[in-house]
Length: 331
Image 1 (cartoon, helix red, strand yellow):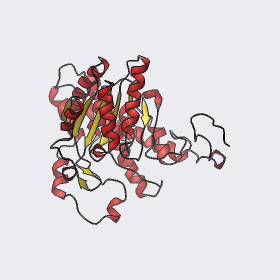
Image 2 (image 1 turned 180 degrees about the horizontal axis):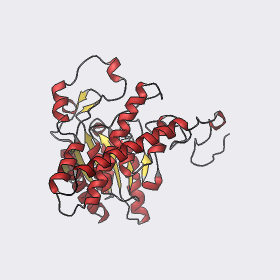
Image 3 (image 1 turned 45 degrees about the vertical axis):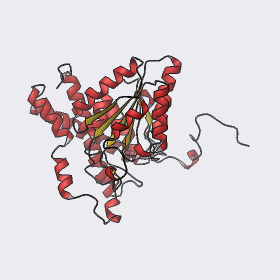
Image 4 (image 1 turned 90 degrees about the horizontal axis):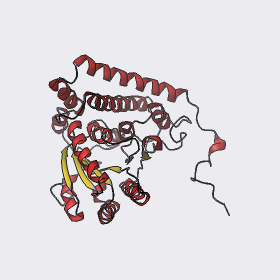
């Protein structure tokens, strides 16, 4: 562990990881009870990636996420109540209940939003970095995308332009081993996705995505490069999703694409357990302190669920509102 990581930073990372874990477990629970409709893609098992990267950033830095869409905003400091209300389709949500699970945005803490379109957030974050350069600002941007998205043209085009224009952006590939049910080993021509950075003349960094501290350190270095005008970095975080690709998928897909032994092996390196052990072994926190962090996160999620349940649905009269960022003449 790097000596310059403070106890406050470690505890903040642990808190946000527990907030994501309890949030996702609650989403799975209420989905099973039929309390909301629509898709949801649990981030359980991957918490260290978003948290390690986001805690290294400032509130004024921007992130863009993907369809596995709850972990990134929570890692950046999103309001749990607004996030849960959006999933419930209620007017108290981030998008007034009109966006759902895959569209959580909060510019006040730098969350540009997410999208269900694979790799579509990559050019958004690249555009934010271009804005920083054109405006002479010192904010950076980061985008989280999966191993499947790494094969999309939008991803390659964005990385190429970011390097050509020397933009302050982090490309963070969450390699959770599978694009739905297809192994990245069957679709990626290089041994590692981070190897592709060579083609775009940027650093490619392979990181243990189950270790929040490793993610924090790698992200901090890439952020420092970006702020210094040294351009983009591609970070490949090796991680694993413990749940199915999306809620309900196990009911319709009968073929087994991964074994129980594989899942159990990855669960042995639960990212929350890894960080907790590092905190305890380093003497930066006690078992009681770590347990209190988890309980606070659990309580915050319970409050978020009650807020969502008690929020009204959007009124029918609002159906055509918020469709554009500014009023546009309709012919």
